[in-house]
Image (cartoon, rainbow, N blue to C red):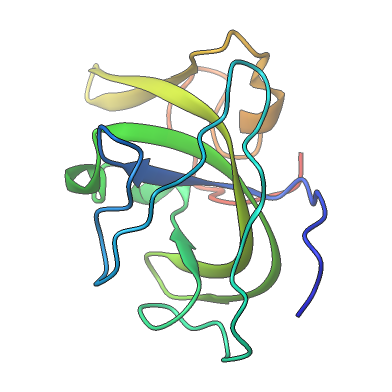
Length: 142
């Protein structure tokens, strides 16, 4: 098992009103970020392989935010680290932490996602275009 270290690789995660994962067969209560401070790292302690829909913490790229909205209503920017597996729709990762909660709204046929904590868009550069619309580059280094 690897150690959780900041990577600068970001994705997105929907949680319910209480900060609990709503997908899968095991609800998971998350430690939430406070203001501009990310949450602690959440780590998968099993030695089993990380596999989408089987094992690991799951998150999505920007292009899947709308498709996974039923798992909300709270949307978070997450940083990921360690071993991972991916499918066409989502990622399963070994380590994950919530960076901040995001606000979102639909406008002109697109989805605009904004920082609630007032942070600059540095975390979002690779995933969100300059106009604030969802970009095709789901996960990338900032």
